[in-house]
Length: 511
Ligand code: XMP
Image 1: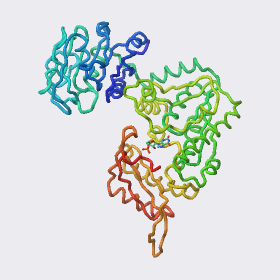
Image 2 (image 1 turned 45 degrees about the vertical axis):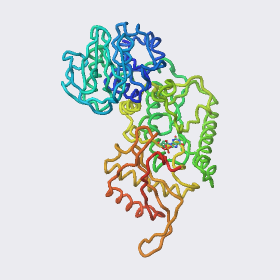
Image 3 (image 1 turned 90 degrees about the vertical axis):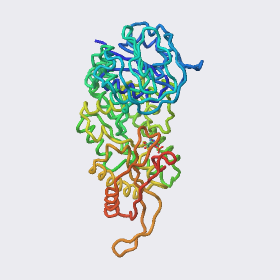
């Protein structure tokens, strides 16, 4: 049976990916598409329902994105959110107009007691609003199904035609019963069966990969990061011949390289080629202090190492696995809510090895789904929940030139920091945390001896996507303990400082 699909039509609102994630969380598969592709996507996917998202445009402007009225007459259930709700009204002969800005939490009062959208929802609850355009006249056949004190049409519906609109945002947490409303739409109105699960996804993908690849040669570059790890584990289920190449550039954290080999070769039984290229990288980096120069050298050296590996395989393979995930696909496919990435992972492999086709088994999944999939495939927590780690590794966490001694100092200090964060159960709430080594040396006193040693910086931030970040409010006692342990246990460190700058104006990494 074909997978049921819901189309989430993007009008450029900031919560659009969140809407798609909520739908998936409700075990319904959805795709986030541009409003310009709506017709072809309906033909291609035969959706069980459509959700119009919010967006920054105003229907009062001539250039606002619009849709054909026909789309609302096909019998496919539609839920319009914010701009999407106004769009339904405007398209079907209703009217919208400017009003006072309504922003933040509002009390929502349900008027249509029998509404399928509000089944089981409290008569009064909290919703989240963000708009200045109001629905002034309902289209024919619609009734007002909810109001707030300031918004006379907070929700509207025409249950006959299965058309629903909400002025507020059911996808955000501040709308207390929003998830229930989305599920009501998906299950009560669209007739969803809840057939989107990670175990189902594994089963289908493995079948497809087997049929497509068979026993042809297939290669994956394993970085140790979540996406490439999960992609490799998934492909390995279908293609045991998968060859994984893992390059240790000598700039990984304590025990990290050994851990990759243990998990993927020993536990998962994969054909893993671990290349210890630390000498090559460190030689190239000797004396280099400029951050971008370090990045460039590392990126280039990766390609050289992969080229060497490629030669050993005869220079070409049929298939190459890459851990592209859905947000990357969305970013390149929708030009509305596109973000500009500041960094790209050091890849190298596609540039260095010839291949016929790229295999991207995660390209439909959000990050949280990738993690669930990882657990389902039996990968351990420290791989699946791993925090982001930059491609150039510790090279951009050592300010100034990189030496084996400095790497050893940083590895120990960083290990203690991570160990204490985990022991204090702060690892899930802090987005990224690490130690960095400054090139500052200061005077200290240990025992009765004068010391002249390095200063370690602790960096810990909360963030959603790394684009902006705030410094994490780690309790003082925890910081105290970390500082004590580092100066006591790590030779050549006599001072520990905590970085309390947000991004912007600072960045997360120090280089
Ligand atoms: P910044 O330091 O720019 O970092 O605030 C934002 C996020 O990107 C990671 N980062 C990198 N990742 N190659 C990478 O693959 C890089 O050169 C690089 N520089 C920073 C950083 O760890 C954070 O998650």
